[in-house]
Length: 138
Image (cartoon, rainbow, N blue to C red; front, side):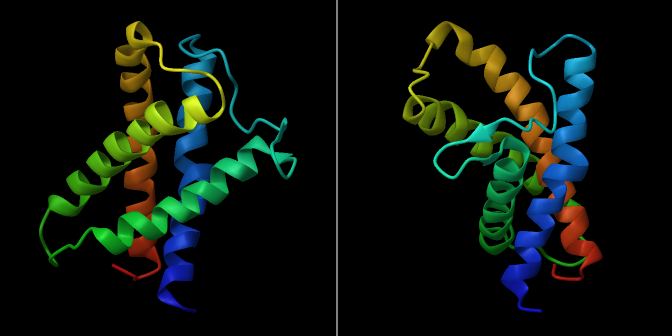
């Protein structure tokens, strides 16, 4: 299987096995109002929200695993994956995706949203690295 397909699979599965369970925990404790594995259709294709999130997780998995370089035996890949997921994905979600969806930039709400996004997306980053290592791609 081509390496980029495995990168995609790692990011896709990380959404299902890491990202969404963290969303579920935060929802169960009343921290966030939305539940995991949302089946509401998303525009423009009408696929369930969880499938859309998993697809974009796969795309971001390709980006993260291609951009970041790791040296064998060093502990830094975990920190890089955590920071990439937490910072890059959250920044894009808050500064690009929300405005594109017409949700705007609420400056007062950015710090708590960034913190929650960082937590959820950092978990995705670590999960992506776990799957990538399981597939022996990094």
